[in-house]
Length: 435
Image (cartoon, rainbow, N blue to C red; front, side, top):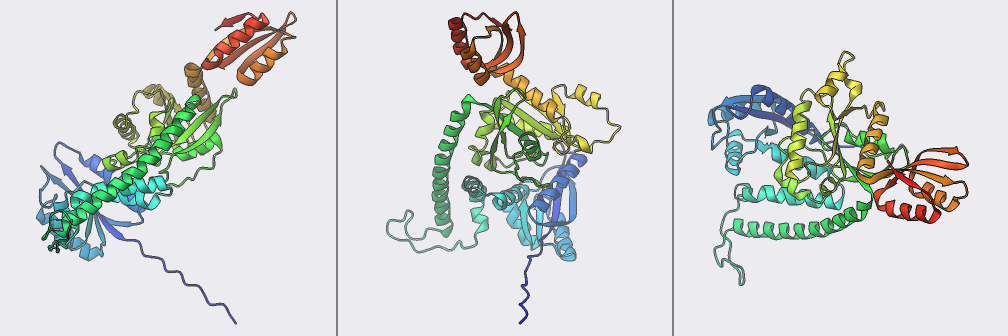
């Protein structure tokens, strides 16, 4: 008897229309176009398909419709012609504006913030990430409850319920939301305490954090540096949870390398606040690798967005190496020397092909040595086996040469171990010379 064919039903992708506005004194047509390109990538990441864009120029925003009633009516007609499911605004809308637009257009209307929250909700994998996204969504939706719910009819009061008879359903909903947010914050606080404890325990090791705009290749770079096998996808916000791996440098030093969430222009403040524990890795880092996409036409603007976000989360001013990634996508006629003159602290790499990875490791090791190590020269007798054994176990030997029956060693050692080295050298009668 032939087997029955299994039929899989795939939900069709939602068709969406993007709306952007040039507001005099706030943005330019070029900036709007770049922002809409990014919004289209966000919509694709969320699983929608963009079938059109609507742009408008205004002196100021319309308090009722953001774009004005006439433009909203044009959008309503466009939605009918193109069978649009969702209208996505590249701006944050007020609750009243969303309500008015949905009533006039007859389609679901969301803003950039809600779209990003939706992506985070779909991509959250760990309990911590799910809690953080849920809290951020509650904080976003709480001011919008009055416009989201239609059941504003009065309900019968019950004994012990504040407000007594006649309390509105919206007030009950708001209190439930506050209670839920309190519980989410309590659970997150427990996770935050454990995370910060883990970070403090790792403080003896040198901590390096990858930061950068979303989709610049941070996870690919982490794999190139550590062979970690971290999940990689060519979409925005592929990484939401911090991932830490050990990176072994040229002279044996072990450092911790952490891949973190990518930043984006106008990242919702609710998410920055909710992802406090995840971003603790960045705040506690000894060194930041700021990864930028060399092939992106607005790379410099993306670099500035990341720098502003680092200030916002309290991680500015840290030692930083600018990593200009995706060198394999550069046209052959690009003047790389000119690039390095523009960005003197930069390192040009391709995480995909491995170009520049060795140089980047050398830069990381140089910073490690600057912060954590001291260089010494020793002349150790050939019978100083105990001292030599300790040196080979705890220090990085840069060079060694036998001369006049003794071993001349140049070594690097972590600063906390300097006292022990000096003590052992004194006991062995070995002269020690700092470099």
